[in-house]
Image (cartoon, rainbow, N blue to C red; front, side, top):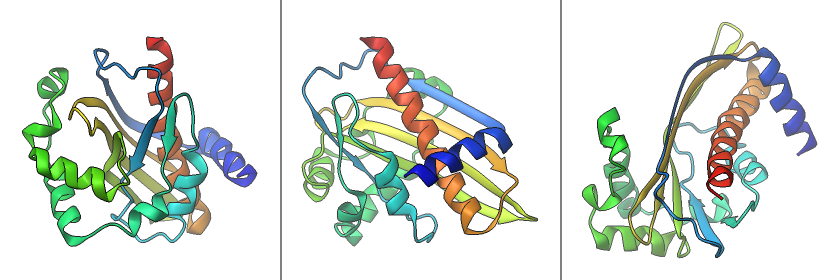
Length: 197
């Protein structure tokens, strides 16, 4: 973990942010009770350290208890992937996001229940709709779009998008960029939650 934090600091120094979009539903009430959070495993690339990095970064914070993403990966059935694909292909326009669209406008209640069942009865779902990390010419490029939904009510809570790059390649670049995209999303979300209290 110490190596990962050091890597993140290197990225902050050497990264070039290219784009960022943040939308947060200020009307959503997190409450004081603990909420189980399922992070949809990254399937957009086959970097072997994805799950390890996710578990290192998504530690329980505030009243959010993150489920082990490696365990969730074992529950990715073809039916679950089909349901998640429906959510992933929904591309909201900016005006749609301002109305905080409900998950039930994309999938039905039984499909939401199926996600909850497969993801260990999670309350919240963080979905990396886009998660691309690639390398070219000695640089690592990253882009992400995360959405956070309440699986009990279907409420849209948060969307965070970012594009950036760093002057490091190889596995170190992949690891750093993956960590950077995840830490950026988590930091923004925690900041928004803290500011609501």
